[in-house]
Amino acid sequence: MPAFEHRFFQVLEIVLVALLAGMLVMVFGNVVLRWLSDTALVFDIKPPLPGGILISEEMSRFFFVWLTFIGAVVVMREGAHLGVDALVKVFGPAGRIVLMVSSDLIVLGCCALFFWGTWRQSGVNASNYAPVSGLNMLWVFGVGFFTSVGIGLIVTLRIVRAITGHLLPHELEIFARETDSAAAPKGISE
Image 1 (cartoon, helix red, strand yellow):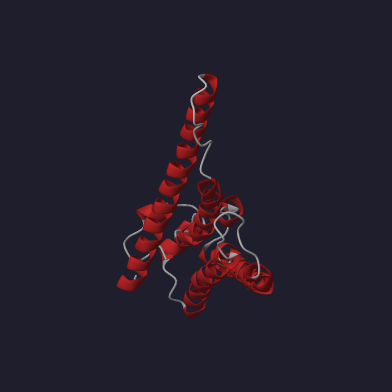
Image 2: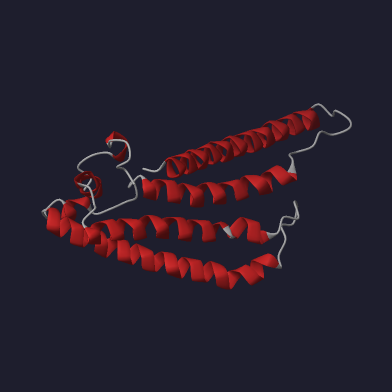
């Protein structure tokens, strides 16, 4: 695996951790503020404490969207998406390659549809703004571009490797769920 690709996915994993940590802080912070606010109401403390931070509610939802879509690219690279491995295990190497290429072509078609749908919605999203933060909604839902292109590149490269005969046996084992992608030798779990 090229060093750039490895670093790129390391950065994506760091972004995922940051998004998850941000969600945790924002949601937990709002829970604590609501509890303190309710406690202040019970004891009639003046002035009343805020019942939560509105922008954190909105941003935690956006973080969840980004976490999901960026995570889909990372999971695709690791070969950890759901699959029908009971069917794949029945076939030998040639059959597995056919099934892998077939499923990758379907995924590539879905990526094209997803990109096209995101493109068609981008005009609407670009003209809408989040009610609290004022963030342009294209920044939120535009992550569909990243996901469709990222997954599309991963499956396209795998199709090319399979057609040209450069697909490694370990990749077929990961596809058939006979081994874990985390246990793959370095540079093979593409």
